[in-house]
Length: 111
Image 1 (cartoon, rainbow, N blue to C red):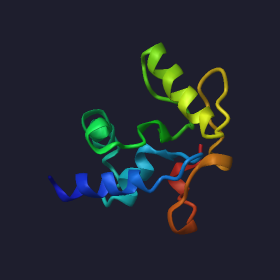
Image 2: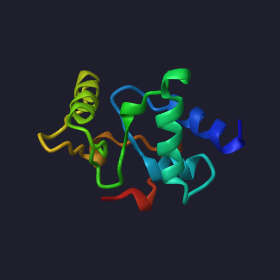
Image 3: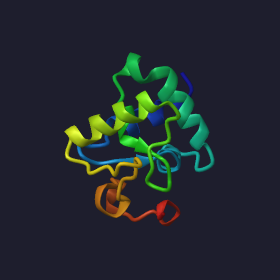
Image 4: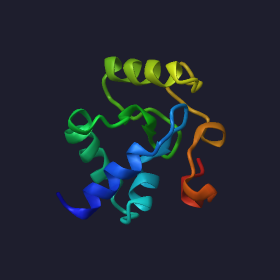
């Protein structure tokens, strides 16, 4: 496994229940700020194997980014079960629910 992949898995496992991170934020914390799409691939291919909290990762606009209606509803339900408020359109208030590593605000993740 490549070091970036291992770092992404480690970052994802640290997202606490009831909080979210963006794809780009995970990529940046894992060491490759421009690799948000790679984070998507890792989530898609390794979530089950590594029991990753895939549902806690959303896009930079605070939106659920899945394309299928079933997937959106599943992610929305999982987030709500953890206490995250999700609008009918799949939006999450990043100011309230975004997890920041080391307590630092990452400017690029502001909606």
